[in-house]
Image 1 (cartoon, rainbow, N blue to C red):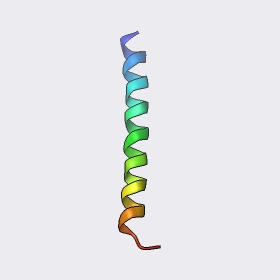
Image 2 (tube, rainbow, N blue to C red):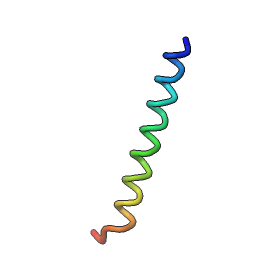
Image 3 (cartoon, helix red, strand yellow):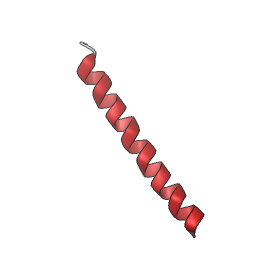
Length: 31
């Protein structure tokens, strides 16, 4: 149970980080 919960939290966290990185790249790169 604990491992599964941690896995879900990790997936959510990584997806959020990826989204933030994309937004940051879009904001900094003039395209």
